[in-house]
Image (cartoon, rainbow over all chains, first blue to last red; front, top):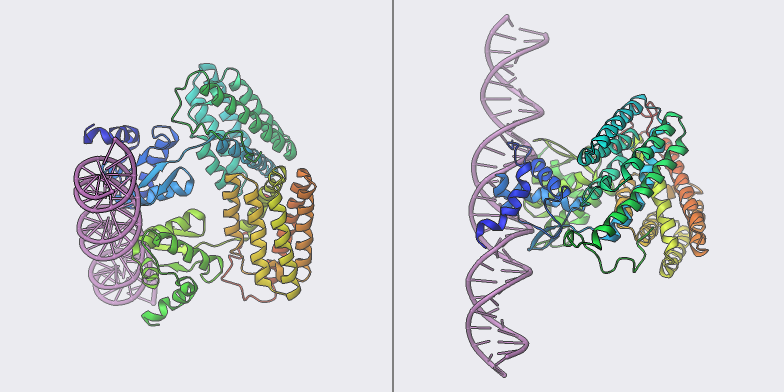
Length: 259
Length: 259
DNA sequence: AGGATCCATCTTGCATCCAATACTCTTTGT
DNA sequence: ACAAAGAGTATTGGATGCAAGATGGATCCT
C-alpha cells in the first residue's frame, strides 16, 4: 500500500466538506465542522484514525487548528485520544445507544413541556410546516430528506424550550444519534408512526397541555428507541455488512445499562 | 497600575493550583484544571480576562496548552471568546440559574431512579457514609466541608446511574452550580433540610422504590432551587457586595426562562 | 526456535514565531 | 469643540520547529 492510499480514504471522507475557502479566525470551526459531519455521516467510521498531519494537508491548514478541532470532538464524545498515539473516531456500543435513548426520553419530554408552557405561536406554525414537508417527503419516499426534516423538527422544539442547558444537552444527544448508520425512516411503517407521534406532541402544544406534550414526547422517544434497537438487531443477524461500524459489544445485555 | 499588578490578581487566583510540576502530556489537563477550579471557586470572577500569555507565564508553560485549555472551558460553558480579543470568564445570569435547576431537577431524578433500579449495595453504603460525615460537619458548622461532601454525594449518585450520558450532563450541571458565589449550607436551617432530603432519597433506594427515589430527588432539587434563589435575592437587596460577581440581569423576570 | 531487547520511525505534545485583527489614543480637519 | 481618520499597541490565530513517548520490527541472546 503506497503512501497515497493511506489517506485516500480520509481525503474522500472529507471531500464533501473541503469546499469552503478557510479564512482566518474560522479555521478551527471549519475543521471541526468538516470532521464532525464526516463522522456523523458515517464517512469516517469508528476506530478510524484521525491523523493531524493528514487532515491538515487535506484541508490545507496547519496542524494547530486540526489539533484544536480534534480536542473539541473528544469533548463532544465523538473521538477518543490515546497519548502520543493519536485520536480515533469513538465507538458507539449498544449500551451507549440504550443509555442515550433513556436520557433522551427525559430531555425531549422536558423540552416539550417547557415549550408548551411558553405559548410560542411561531413554534406551532413552524412545526406544522416541517410536518407538512415531512408528509411530502414521505409520499416521495425520500428517506434522507425525511431524516433531515426530522432533525429540524426536534431542533426547533428544543430551541423553543428557552432553556440553554437543555438545548445544549439535546444537541449533544443529537450528535450521538446521528452517528447511527441507518435511518429508522427506512423501516417499513415507521415513517407513518413518527409523523403521527409528532402530531400528537404538536396537538398537545396547541392545546396548551404541557403534561400531555411531555408524555407524548416521551412516548415518541420510547418508540424511537424500540425502532432503533430493532433496526440494529436486524442489521446484525442476517448480514454482517455493518460489522466494524458497530461495536457489537460482547457485553451487551450482561450488565445493567441504566434504563 | 504597573505591569505587575495587572496579573497579580490572576497569579493569586491561580496560586493554589500551580503546585503540581507540569509533566509532558499533562500540560493541557493541568492548565484546564487550574483554570476551571479557579473559576468554580470564584477566584476568577465573571468577566475577568483570561490572557493566554499571562496564564502561560504564571503556570510556566507556553501559550499552546493554555489556548487548548481555554477552548475547552469555552466548550464547557465556563468561558466566552471574542475573536482576536480574548476570553473572559462567562457570566451566570439569574435566568441561567433558573434554567439550570429546571434541567437539574429532571436529571437528578432520573439518576436516582436508574441508580435504584441497579440495586448497588455499595452505593447505599457509601451514601450512608457520606451522610454520616455530613452530619458531623453540620455539627461542627463546617460549611465548606459540607459543600464538598454534598458534591461527593451527588457525584456518587450520578455515577451509580450507570448511564454515561447522564453522568456527563450532570457533571456539566455541577460545573455551573459550583460557580454560585455562596453555599446554601450557610442559610439557617437549610443544612438540616438537605440532610433530611438526602435521607429520603436514600431510604427510597434502600426500599428499591425507584419511583419514590426519583420523586424525592426532584423534591430535593426544587428545594435547592428555592434556597438558591432566596439566597441570591438576599445577597442582592441589602448589600451589593456581590455585585459584579453576578450578572444581575436587568431582564430577570421579563421573559420566560423555561420553568 | 523463542523471547527479550534495542533501534528506527511515526505521531503527538509543547514551544516559538509571524501575521492579522481589534482596540485605543492621538491627531487632524471642519 | 467634536467627529472622523490614522497610527500604534495589545492580543489572538495559525504555522512551523523540535523533542519526547509509543509502536513495530529487526537483531541478538539463550
